[in-house]
Length: 161
Image 1 (cartoon, rainbow, N blue to C red):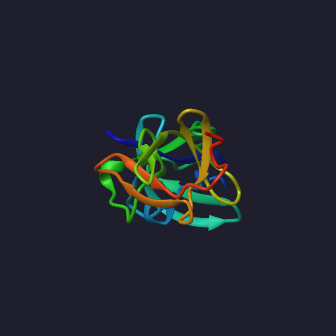
Image 2 (cartoon, one colour; image 1 turned 30 degrees about the vertical axis):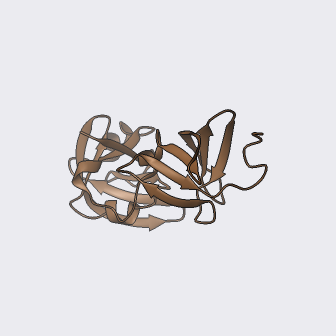
Image 3 (tube, rainbow, N blue to C red; image 1 turned 45 degrees about the vertical axis):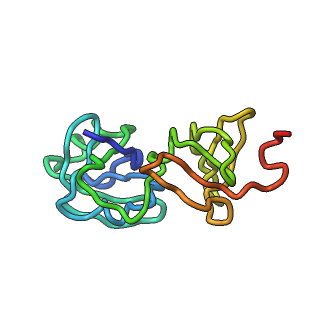
């Protein structure tokens, strides 16, 4: 199974087992649909209903019919099996471990993704550790087959001489 983190189950809502999930997963509208599978604590659950409320993704799940059952899931991470879905584009987790190049010059390897309010930053471990915004102005190309990312270098971006 190829698990991908999509969010955290932070609380319950109501008496019938509805749960609140916080997720910034960019394809969550493809995930939070009736009859789709999510994984919580290594257990598979089927989504019965979904609605968005404030900052939360509100979900009811099969076999969770009361607040007492839902409370047992509070605080746990929510995953999907990536093999069950097709996405237009790449996932953040696909970028970890890819080599980074600027005009053919090796700059390092993506070791993490730092989430910010504005945009995600790719953490690149090269001669020095540095970050590059994950936006089209900086990311020229992502080639998952070749396991590499081509960036647009800007003077001072990595403090390398």
